[in-house]
Image (cartoon, rainbow, N blue to C red; front, side, top):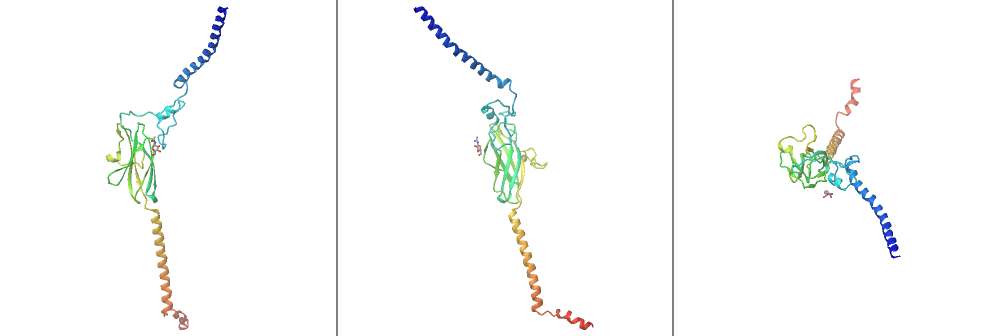
Length: 239
Ligand SMILES: *[C@@H]1O[C@H](CO)[C@@H](O)[C@H](O)[C@H]1NC(C)=O
């Protein structure tokens, strides 16, 4: 009696364990598969990374955070200073003396950016440091009619990118900021002052012509210019 109950108990324990073992086995397999799939069987996808997009999260962080593995563009060594960024569009708002500068990241690890700005032969002025996600910055206090050079500098722990315009090579001499870090910023004269000048000149011209007309007629009528009666008097004289 004791033996059979013992046997029953053992059987019960054994059967209650079986489903658990079965339930565990597929999970363990799935985990192994999940670890293998991204590396081997899934097609490679490029990360949603745009080197010119403002506030772009660094690609290696996208790789870490994403649900699927993705590919990042290759970067130069972190032991070397970054390659120069590429200056993009420079949009000048002449009325406010402002300009918005955009750029694209180099294929290098970057810790921060900053802008350099100078006018003619003046000394370059350095802007505030911008973090590595930034691709857009604003220049302020530009003079109307001013001609400036602006450059973007990228830096990492190993150093900063080169600035060709400071080494004597002109910025974008081949027609605007082609692929370099520098470009020209030409601020047109204040449009408002142009309008004011045009209105002023127009008003002065109108006043002048009015004055001329008034003077012309007044003088003729008041001074009783002697020329007026003459044409009326001529026909009889001519006959
Ligand atoms: C980088 O700077 C921008 C603009 O100042 C800011 O909005 C953003 O939160 C900063 N990002 C990091 C990671 O500090």
